Image (cartoon, rainbow, N blue to C red; front, side, top):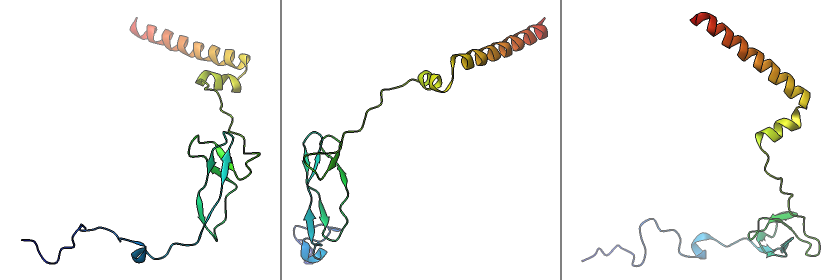
Length: 119
């Protein structure tokens, strides 16, 4: 037989069962946001909260604004760049040649020093 103290249909650690236990919800306002793909999102905000200018579209991830006729433009996607492409943006060809010459001189000096030691 079971104990008389158990509550049927509930488990130990279960939270409140309804709004009466949680308290009343704050008054809400629903605001429409549209992205460049014409997706509409209607998040709710507390009526006394400040409404943001943009909201991320949950369907495509683009920014969404409150003006349906002129939504914010999607962010410009930068193409993937290799490490070499970034180096070439910072260095000119003459800089690269000077760095290469310096590195080759260092390697040659190290190679000649090690060959003298082993001989």
